[in-house]
Image: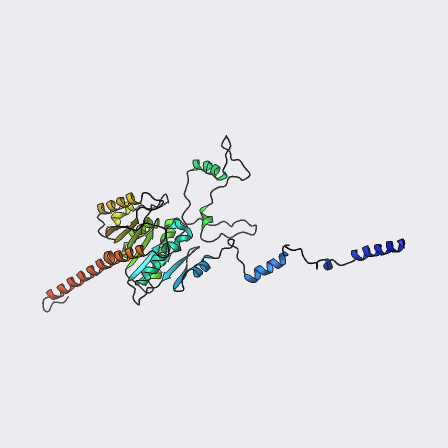
Length: 370
């Protein structure tokens, strides 16, 4: 009997070794086990998964989901950079004028929220509005002697002799080219492909304004006013000063100094803007910027010394509580100033011109050819 059991055990071992490998693969995987790579790859191909950021949709998709149906999302390209613009048609057949809204370049993806109230409210009152996504600011250039200090701070701990400690190595500041609006391509070895250095911020800012102005000329609308928020103010003023032939008006909302070392300063631009209509709207107090009131007084005094006849400054009576989809006090203030300080002077100048031409026609002698 023992010999029979021994033979049966030996036969079972031999039979098990002779089974094909594919048979064992049909076992049910344990609960919670990861799917094979082939299954994961097929799902990714099926749904065209693009993992630019974990759980993040592309900018265009987010804009179309976030904005109402009557807001047109425009995709624009300048050189190798792609950016977006939001066009809100006026609620009338012939728009009163056009507003090009220039959000603060330091607000990152908050540019939509910062301009939302004016974009929508002024369109309801007859203005064509267009919001331009600002370019990515240049990385600040630091003196070479400060770099070791910045490296030490990045690690978080320092030894007695100033050397970095810990498992993480000191990191260099990211180059400006890696913070562009689009991702940098990779080479076959998995390393980022070398990219050409970006143009300076001012050049990219002006190129985007020129492209946005072309959009506002289809069909042509007058007057065209640049509405600059925060740190866009000096750059917008510099653009107008170098393009006076375009007859653009300017609205400054809580203007801030440019963070770029070579950025323009409003104090040096007033003489060139002596014939430009400028509205300066500011909050005081402005959270995070205690110099809002003193800086506003400096701007007003400098504009008066430069004899900027079209300059007008107004302080918001309501406190600033953040950028929201509805800001009725700001929209009402801006609308009233646009009508009284830009539209009315234009109408008065046109009426005066017509009166002068009519008087000249009446003074012509009989038989005189004009």
